[in-house]
Length: 241
Picture 1: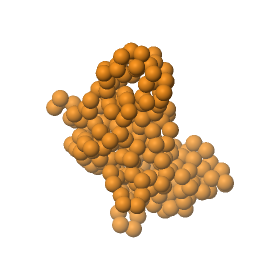
Picture 2: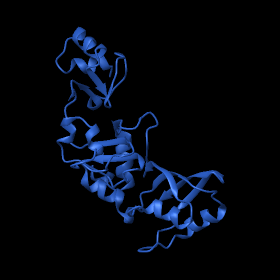
Picture 3: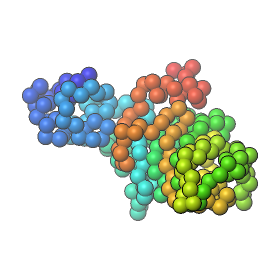
Picture 4: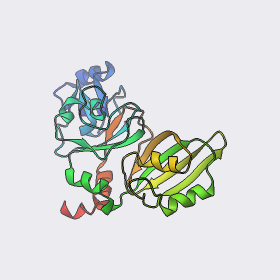
């Protein structure tokens, strides 16, 4: 649906809709948009902070978490990921799927679907999490093998993880790492165990959902119907629809 037509559903005339768009009162996925012909989904369009399509029964959102933000719905002293969402969404019973450390950036899923959230973080369902890690020193094939074998940490043994080295040098290295579990500070601790402390960490994928490259830090969007179906299929929930 065209943006101007979607905005008119908020009770505005066609000329009023165009004026609202041009003045920056209309947002799509949390960002002001001035292209009246842009194709949109109703649930993503807001006029003066109010969703023109109403509030969906279940909420499925991806957000690109900035550094310094807590993966929670409230905190007395620090910003949280849900601060970036409109009021009508924050009022629903939503929560982030799992957690990212305060200094870690990238993909966070936020949903009101508690069963889906539980299965995505449960080791039983083995939903992969893909991280891009930057670390000190030069990664080598031995480090890949160590990750693949599982690393014994002080309080548990990390399950085997896949490491793909993207670049390596004495000044630092970059690698993609895939885990099927998510213990506290796990990725940081695994890199520390092989003597390559992390300098940056970003999550790029949860299960079948990849971080939308168009999302800047702090931006969000609703998952598409296809993405929701794929997530439910991954977690064996598709047969319940």
